[in-house]
Length: 236
Image 1 (cartoon, one colour):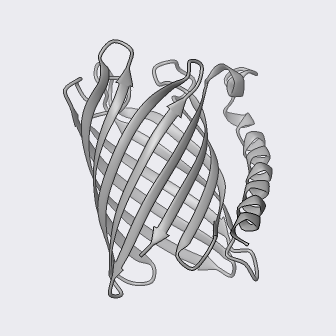
Image 2: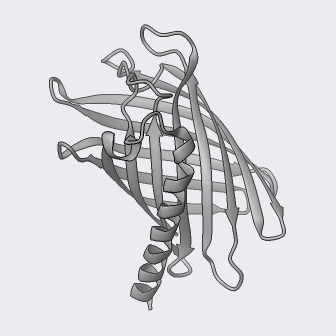
């Protein structure tokens, strides 16, 4: 039963990926956007525990892999807490320890703290979520230089749809990174455009697959990635 659900979600994800590729066309600075950047695979595994009606604790691990050339790009472990104020509004604080791979220095450790908020609303089966976040990154490589600013503001908007008589929810999201990296002025230096599909494999397990385009705004300052991702969440 679980295998059939996984196959069904994967087939739906492939259709979402095609639609997302079409949505990416307005962002193309040349006709080879999806082929000139670096393909990547971002799997993650998370465990979440609820305490009463308002509090949640979540631990997450991911090994991010890039291709051309093939290498582990980043490893991270994240621990966070969330407070659900009411049905629509939630707040969370996260700490992330990561190691970013560099051909010269090998793995560079970094620490990130983020304070985030969620506002969710629904119109029939449609849902919209506004997710502003503020993050601070600390590392011994000057905030990892061209990766992230020391301080950044990350507004994100997500639209999803709940398919009738199922747990499946296709979604699309757009996120901006605003900050001042080393040697640059404060600006929007990176974006993420994501489309995907999530669904419950069982009462306690949820699988989400997505395709993401990440990069700078028609510049080579930020690395550009086309990312296939898979997130497995276990609810205790």
